[in-house]
Length: 187
Ligand SMILES: Cc1cc2nc3c(=O)[nH]c(=O)nc-3n(C[C@H](O)[C@H](O)[C@H](O)COP(=O)(O)O)c2cc1C
Image (cartoon, rainbow, N blue to C red; front, side):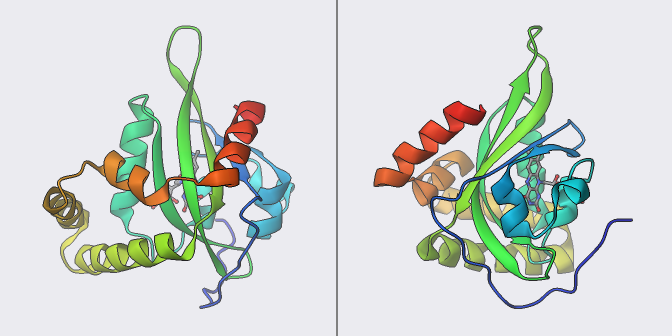
């Protein structure tokens, strides 16, 4: 059993330029992290390597979001999402995460990577409202129903999940430039 902090209603803010990286195996066990990951989450490298990535799972996150993420990754597709993470201190931090499968020469998925950056307040506000509704539906009626709610929400806006997220999280200006340089470095 891994350490589970007591959840505090206190936000950790970190620099927009502080990108957080991790790599996992196909089960979501962490195999690589960068320094920023430790700094923001509060866990040191020894605590993180080999641990399941749900060590950061925040109880406010709907399961449906991770279902969508895993479905994309294991079918070889990159996907982005907005995630509320739980730090070791019990505080939370919102990130925009770009997740990608890594392939071997045979074209099989062998590892998964995540690049994260701080989510701006407008992104948090939009996501928080959506997730609160999804979580409430999940608690009462299960994950299928919250997935159905998300589908209806997207249909109403005439968007796919990827289109919705892309529009919501589009990096702007210097952050976009820094982010692509950073991805080249760690990719
Ligand atoms: C590369 C990668 C990065 C992930 N990053 C996070 C993360 O930052 N926070 C998180 O809660 N889950 C993250 N996950 C998803 C977790 O593996 C897990 O599915 C999620 O925390 C839900 O936990 P559960 O499946 O035990 O309900 C990541 C998964 C992968 C493959």
